[in-house]
Image 1: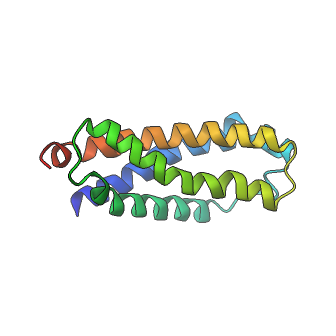
Image 2 (image 1 turned 90 degrees about the vertical axis):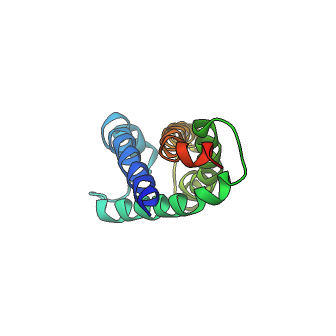
Length: 138
């Protein structure tokens, strides 16, 4: 249970550490110009809830992924995180672009892709590090 809580918290903290500056400071005007942000003020609580649920799901499923696998825990964590990240990426980038009037779409896809890669490589590395003893003992 301790590893699940640490995994979920690391996902939440690292995602927020990247997501807030990326979306609200560094590229806020770019996203606004593309039409991504349609609310005057985002509902931060819903975004935080989404990140928490994603972190919980990742923390819950990861131990099943690394069972009977050998290798670098960090590499296994990143591999798993990128696989899970594809689900989030498909919704956050492609489904969002399909549903909302975002222009240019290619620019939104590029920014979204870069963000998701950074997010899931970082959180995957942390996930592998947290589970390093269990992975090395399996």
